[in-house]
Amino acid sequence: MKVQDIMTQSAVCCSDDTNVGAAAKLMRVRNCGMLPGVGTDRRLFGIVTYPDVCIAMGTETDCRVN
Image (cartoon, rainbow, N blue to C red; front, top):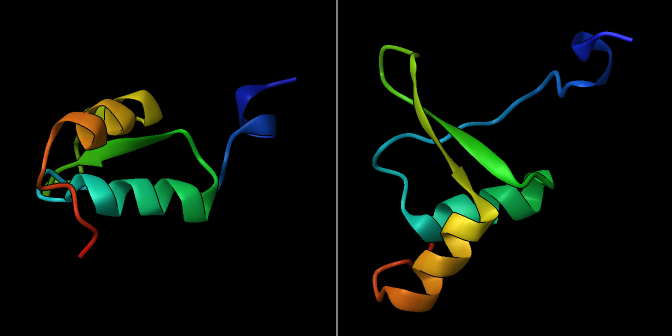
């Protein structure tokens, strides 16, 4: 078995200006536990995970969904 046999073909990502609430909603709707962060140059600059979202939403005040 190869990675291509089990990986998600229609991946979703976020940008550096995506707010935490929108990222959480995207993870819920797309049933995923992480989002790659992709810049305007389409290069990966990091990832955000569901624990990142939980911590941010539990400690910050500006995590609303736009």
